[in-house]
Length: 248
Image 1 (spheres, one colour):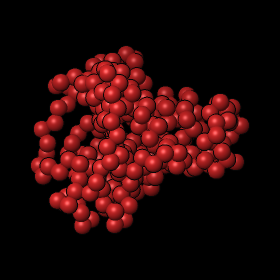
Image 2 (cartoon, helix red, strand yellow; image 1 turned 135 degrees about the horizontal axis):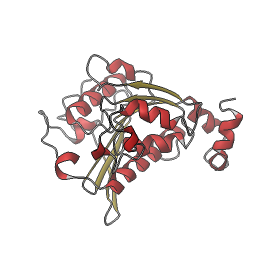
Image 3 (spheres, helix red, strand yellow; image 1 turned 45 degrees about the vertical axis):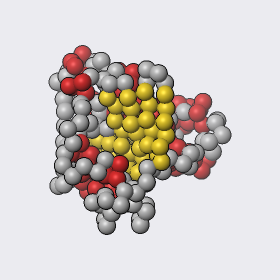
Image 4 (cartoon, helix red, strand yellow; image 1 turned 120 degrees about the vertical axis):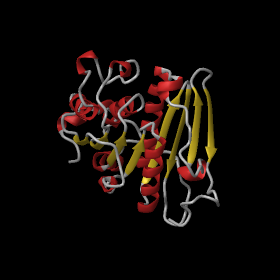
């Protein structure tokens, strides 16, 4: 049995849905998900993945919780200020499903520890750091790992799943082919709506489930959302012949 009696009770309302047949429930139970960044997107993302039945995770984040995080990083409260995000997130997630298996790393991903991603079925990047995102993207291309890039700024969301299939190259670098670190707007300089961050987390969770259970083809589709006017655009991302990772 892939879930305990307790878990079947917790997820009973979802598991009666058509998409959650025995085969797909088994997929959820066995999937390994890596999440880099437990901030405004990462918090609702992991909450809704756990509440949807996913149970095997690896969390990466070296940051400690600050008061300025609390407006949008909804897992944490004032009593958590000064604590590590990864440890606090694990403790709170286990309150929903104590049978989750969660590995936590109080560090950012670097070239030295990228191999920790190797057993992941999907790598989800919400780290809000362009240098790290490029590094993770390159590793996922090289190892043919599913990679979801999820970002939010102001009232705007960008999410894309790159499947990194062998000999079918489309990656983050195809979409943003800058050779040097981009001078990207960051939440701490231009701001972010708490609702925008939350929606980004929820949509990323749904894309993850869609991919694992083959509910909808999310391959190389960039989803752009403006949360103030509810506009949504889905753009098919193609290989960029000038991408420096084309021969990976």
